[in-house]
Image 1 (cartoon, protein in one colour):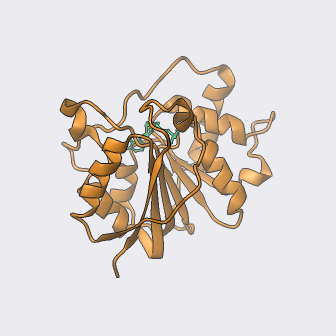
Image 2: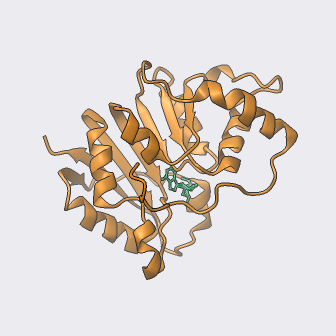
Amino acid sequence: MKNQEIRTFGRRHGKKLSERKSFLVEKVLPGLIPNESESNDILEIGFGAGEHVRELAHEFSNKIIIGAEPFVNGVAALLSAICDEKNQIKSEYKNIRIWPDDVRLMLNNTKFKFSEIWILHPDPWPKARHEKRRLLNSDFLNLLANNLADNGKIIIGTDHWGYYDWICEQVSKTNLLQNDSEIEIIKTRYQEKNMAQTSEPKYLILTNKN
Ligand SMILES: C[S@@+](CC[C@H](N)C(=O)[O-])C[C@H]1O[C@@H](n2cnc3c(N)ncnc32)[C@H](O)[C@@H]1O
C-alpha cells in the first residue's frame, strides 16, 4: 500500500472484547494469517462479522477462503464462530484464513490467484466530501484484476445505488468486463440493515477481458 493511501474503513475497534475473544485474537488468529505457499482460492474483502465467509467455507470445503477485515471486533466475531468451546477451530472451518487489516496491504505485497473475490456492501461513504474514501476506485479494481486466476471473477454487491453507478464508472476505466448476470440476494448483516433504503441490492460480476 502506498504510504498516502487513504483510509477506506471506519473504526478499527468497537466495544471491549470479552476475555474469550481477546484470547482468540491473541492466540488463534496468528495461526490463520494467509500463507503464500498455500493455494489461496477465494477472497472476501470487508467480511464484517464473517457470516458469508463461513458460508463460503461450507460451500467450497476443498478451497482455502481468505477473509480480510480491519475491524477487530468483526475478526473476533468470526473467530468466536469458527472455534469450539476448547478454542480449537471446528473441523468444517479449517479452510478459513484471516487477514486482519486493510486488504491492500496484503494484495500489494503478495501475488495471489483467486478464482473468486467477494465484496459485499463496501462502505458507500455517501457524503460527497468522503467520496475519496471509497475502496472500489479504478486503481483498486486493477489491483484485484491482477490477483485473479484465469476465468476468475469479482462479485460486488451494494444496496447503495449511487455507489453502484460510481463503481460501474470506475470499471469502465479498467480492463475488466462487467457481466450483468442475475444473482440471488445474499443476506448479510449490513444488507439487512438496508441503510441506503433501496428496494434491493445491486450486484456486479467482473472478469478480466482476456
Ligand atoms: C459496510 S461493512 C459490510 C460488512 C459485511 N460485508 C456485510 O455485508 O455485513 C464494510 C466493511 O468493509 C471493511 N473494509 C473497509 N475498507 C477495507 C479495506 N481496505 N480492507 C478490508 N476491509 C475493509 C470495513 O471495516 C467494514 O467492516
